[in-house]
Image (spheres, one colour):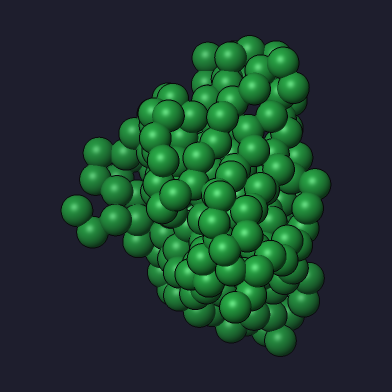
Length: 113
Length: 111
């Protein structure tokens, strides 16, 4: 079991471009969480998904951000028209369900120039 | 709504000193609580969970429902304990469950 895989590890985008961050959960896990970590700040919850469903997106900015977790393939966090303030580390975690350990990926560091 | 509060952003102690990282939570149901640790340049990993009541790397945490707290303690800090520590709560939102983290405490253990 390779663990939670995130790619790319580092992503540089110019202002106005789109950023796509991918997360492959651990085998057998159907719950995925996305978090954002800004410099000198903690983990901020963005969105919680189960296969094909968004369960809680209360932490997602209303515009430009979207997430999906299709039946097949990785979960995708998509940021359209990136701005400098989007620069952060984005972490994905997966779990097999209720009250079980969540395993984290190594994160994607997005830099907007 | 569920909320996790870690009041200390930074905590600095000397090697061998006791350390306590505070965590308070707000949740109407029966929570599951965890401590995660992130060492420099590594991914977050689970340190301990309250239901297992075990001690990991010398750390313990007791759930106090009366005070809604889950403080992390270690009697003698080591330099290798320097890391970012996150308290997390697993609670229900209807029939679905969400993992909520506090903002984290950066622990520095000085020689």
